[in-house]
Length: 128
Image 1: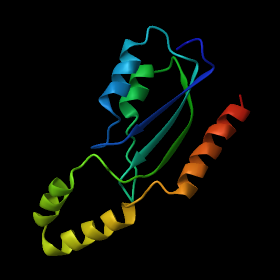
Image 2 (image 1 turned 120 degrees about the vertical axis):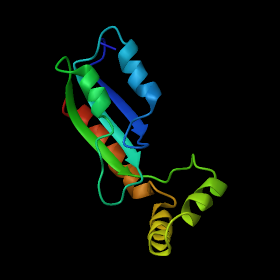
Image 3 (image 1 turned 30 degrees about the horizontal axis):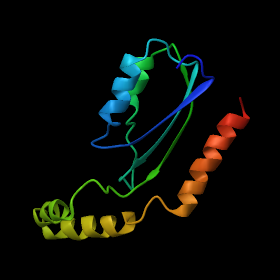
Image 4 (image 1 turned 180 degrees about the vertical axis):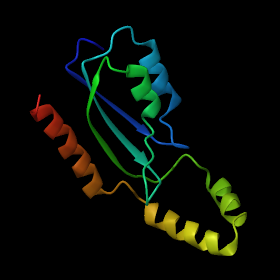
């Protein structure tokens, strides 16, 4: 990876963490690039927890994180039966809130969010 001026790393955030394969990729790299940019999707409408913290710890001071981009995204990895089962276990007031949140997440990231992600990447590359 050290041959590149910048490496973009992207992942969905699950339980406040990036995909394990992404973290393993950094572990297995013999040399890291000078610069990184991170992008992710997550289901949190109110607050994004730094899912890249494990990756940041692994790269330490050897590389710079130039920028990060995040947006909400629907978790398509949960089967519908499991999603319904999870909702049924919630108290009624929390269930209603979770159902509204799931409806809000449906179809995200939106085309507008995809465009923002593209603009993010183009800005980073343009500043190199």
